[in-house]
Length: 272
Length: 266
Image (tube, rainbow over all chains, first blue to last red):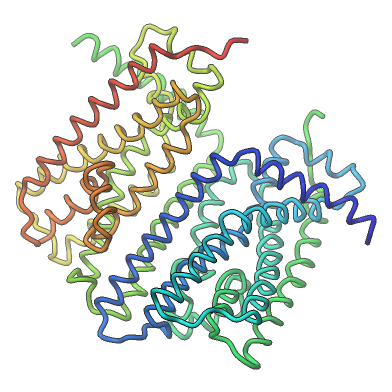
């Protein structure tokens, strides 16, 4: 345990340092991704304005405001695309170096992602979160989130993070078969933004589709923590949701190991 | 006249070379196409789900919104197809010093930049846009007389020019600040606001996307002219005016930039 900490901690801190070095570009990207949140904010306000019901898809107008921005906070810390790094390593051939070192490649990637996650949590995640809480209490007149709620949300977020990176690792394995993963990544991002509930709460989907989603890992990535934050899950449902997340972590971990074994057998690296 | 002929011939030669590299990797081409296609289709799926809950969005019906959405993709796709190389000026070519090669050849520099690449990914956007617009025609919500048909072509062309101008302007900043990619990205992504009727936004945002970075004139405003909403034809006139003005500014800045360009050295 102590040994692996010594090995993988540098991956975490290096990534953190690397991110700190390119702050300028990073803040502009935050601005861009916030565009999306503001577009959906205004869109939802217009939608609620055009509806004769106060509650749509199980959400009130105020809850939707919280939903839109908490989705932003959650997805910014959870969706760390390690498949980018995998495809980079494969294209450049540096993946070979990772194979001969006495470290677990996947673990090193996840450690890097963890550094990224911490950075994104500190900037801008936590500030937008606090800002949203203040707005929520003063303007929307809703009750502030409880300490227990914050704890459960963060717990759920950590599992979401693991589900996402483990899934993305499996996805990144495609890089071993094609060099142009950019297009696929675009398709993945688009699909995920839909299936994880980033674009629209999953409660808006038809019943039958929701049943199918229950058997896929995607709703556990972003939707579950945000719903927990909103206090939509209580009692048994809450524990069931958390357990389901834990189950997905295990399943995707095992799946990733299997694929990795298969893929590294057929790997050919040119030059050195 | 001869210069035109020469440039057309050069364009054909350069693009043929580029197409050869694409033919080498057909899978990549298909995936890029798929990526952009998916991206757009899901935006429509979103609208469908929302309209399960409400009859209309501030007076707009689902069919109308889909037309606006589809219409917005066409000028975007055209610009994306032909001038994608401008992104490289913003991110790489200036800071690397690779821009040298354009300076050395006896050809128009802007022409060289765009003639180097066609972006086939854009076909995904064009495909979605065309499908949505054509399917809207059968729903009888679009005015289809000769005047509107002619202005449709004009508007798409002007829209593409506005896109190109905005891209060129922000990319040209790289001549002074070396990497202007992030700024270009911010400006470019603002186009997403114009996929929906701009009335839903706060005044500040509406002003910004109508007059400062005028994507509303590429998508929502001309689209509403083709819908039966009584928007005057002036909107297309203003769009063309903006296209000309923005193009002149962007091209002037780009030209000025090529004069201050200094290579990376070695």
